[in-house]
Structure formats: C-alpha cells, structure tokens
Length: 68
Length: 198
Image 1 (spheres, rainbow over the protein chains, first blue to last red):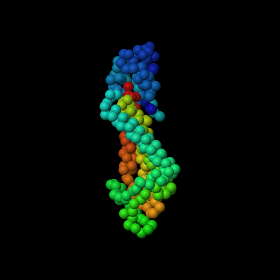
Image 2 (cartoon, each protein chain N blue to C red; image 1 turned 90 degrees about the horizontal axis):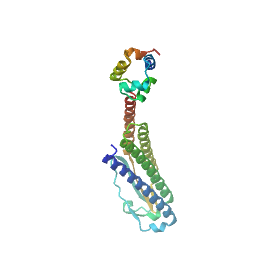
Image 3 (cartoon, chains in turn red, purple; image 1 turned 45 degrees about the vertical axis):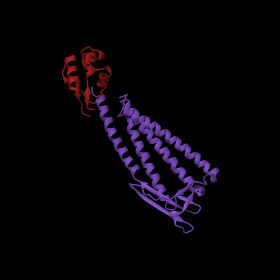
Image 4 (cartoon, one colour; image 1 turned 45 degrees about the horizontal axis):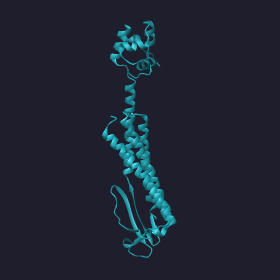
C-alpha cells in the first residue's frame, strides 16, 4: 500500500510507548499494532484526531504517501 | 444471539433430518441385502402403476408388457424385480442419501456459525459452494437416471415400466447456494474491512 504509517517515528520522537498511546486515545494495543504494522484498511478521523492530540503533531507527520 | 430460539429449532431440525437420512440409508441397505438373500419374502408386495407426473420437471412415463396385455393394468410383483434394477435403485438411493446428508451437514454448520455471531466467516462461503456442488451432483444423478431409463428403470419378469423425471429444483438450489456464497463473500470482505478499521 502506498500509504505509510510513521507512528513508530512519532512515538520515538515523543518518547512514548505504544501501550501508553493506546490508553490515551482509547483503542486496544492490538488495534494500535494493526495501525503501526500497516495492516489497517482504514483510519477513523476520530482516531487520527486523538493520535494527533496525544502526540502533538499533524496528520502528515503520521501518514505519508510513497509512490510504488 | 446464543439463545435464539429460531436458530436452535433449525439446528434441531437439521439433526433430526440427518438422523432420518442415516436410518433410511440403513433400512435401504438392509432391504437391499435381504431382497437378494430371500426374494420370496417380497411375494406379497405388488406395485400398481400410477403415472402422475411431477411439477416443474420433464417427466417420462412409459409402461410395457411382454405379453401384449394392457400394461397399465398389469400388476408387478416386487419379487420379480431384476438384479440390475435393484443395484441401480440402491446406487441411486445411496448417492441421494449421501448428497442430502452432506448438504444438511453444511447447512447446520452455517446455522451454528450464525448462532456464534460468526456469520461472515470464510468457512460459510465454502459451505454454500459445497451445497451448490452437491445440488449439481444431485441433478446430474437424476439426469443420468433419466437417460438410463429410456431403456427401463423397473424391469420385471413379465415386463416393466419406468417413471422418471428430471427435476430442476436441485439446479435452482445450486444457483441460490452460489449466489448466497457470493453474498457471504462480500460480507466477509466488509467484515474484514470493518475489523481492520482503527
């Protein structure tokens, strides 16, 4: 998929653990793992909003388009 | 949905039907063996010819007698049934029992998965396809017997008659099953997408 999730990078920048982020945004660690691994088919705006709020970043910092 | 009465009734009916098929198959096998061992025991069983065509099918009714009697008034005694006919009938019944039993089994699996709230799983798609395949096999079997029976189906010592028909209902079942398999495939895709939406 040409959309890459850079959540790992942002988590490292903010020195935050996945479990911590999952608790803040209110999703399960399993779902966060799906998102991080790029297996997710879709991301809800509400989830994206919560991630941006928790990591104090923009959607573009998490999502990236790479041409195949 | 684990306490859904309708689904529980459907599962129970499936189990009863399966049991009936097993018992019928055992009974048929017993009669099949017994008729070969002791044919005279079937002296009293007489077959009266009634040519009633079935609905939604191509029917073929024919009757003939070697002695140029009126074939419709001829009384056929089961004792005089030829060995080939017995084998053909037994083979047909065995195939029908097996196909219907397997179809019911697949249908029961689908209902049980619906009860477990696991409706759009991959196994259900395969189950519907299997039911479709079994229905086609059933149709082929009836078609085969229709072709075979142009010579005779029930051949007795004094003559014989055949009353066969091609029923298109299994084909309709097959079509419905394949359509349902496609619907469930779409449902499975949507479920996967829903599960992978974060």
